Image (tube, rainbow, N blue to C red):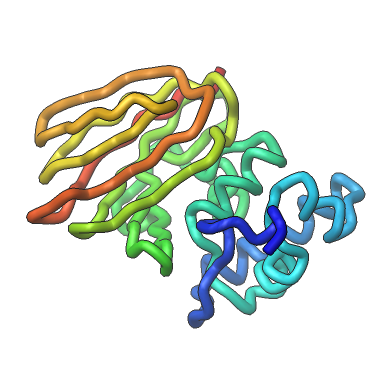
Length: 200
């Protein structure tokens, strides 16, 4: 296998959701806006052309790792990408209106508590990992972005640029992100955490 089919970049087969369908349209539009062919995007992202094509046609549910690679290529956070497929943002984000996205490969659940908003640089995300779940990101979506990760329930094993941290409920880790990260839930229960992201 070539580098375009690295582990963690391939999305599994599964029934696409409504969010997946809107994401597919936006991903195709982003590629068109940059004037890239599928081959060019494959070279830039390290994702196979066939996987990119299927994601743009909503034939698969993209994984967190796949979307992270595309966000890095397009220079936006995942929250920013998800906000682009939502309706007009409001100052008050009601719980029922917060976008929830699931990574079908790892079972990672991501809620956009306070998505990107024009004129504001910060966003708040809630993550949930089941015991044993492991989500690697090989690059930051936006180099140098600031993150504060506050564990709300359970335990979170977080590796940031090669340094490992074991966080318990109530612990908070803060850093600027320049390299790879890995989120792992060692159990015995699920891990729930808040992420505050501030773009540089």
